Amino acid sequence: MPGKIIRRLKPEEEEILRKREELAAIRATLAERELELVDLRSQIAAFEGRYLRQVGTLYAELDEWKARIAELQARLSPSATSKVQAGEAREQGAPGLRKRPRRGI
Image (tube, rainbow, N blue to C red):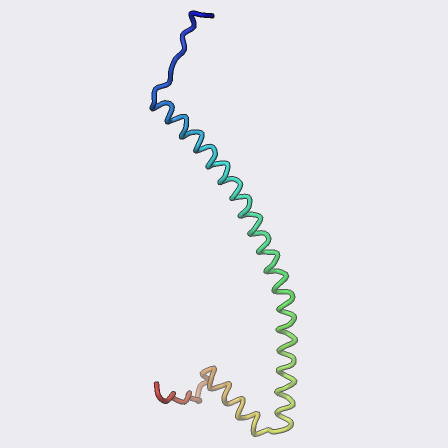
């Protein structure tokens, strides 16, 4: 139809359309990144679980070895063990034992 009227958009309307398209693209990117974030968080949670299971076992084994070493030290030299225990108590701030002041500080 040759007599059809075509409405031209004002510059402000064109700008609004461009901004809406830009906003839609940004929202799509945001949705993708939110999904990535959820995925990464689940991967971190899985890693933490594996880490705690594996490292927790190793720490338990380390504690056993420390106990065995302490037992052997006590058998070999009871006075050395009491010195070690006193040093540990001093480090932990046990009542009745004061830490030695540091010199040169």
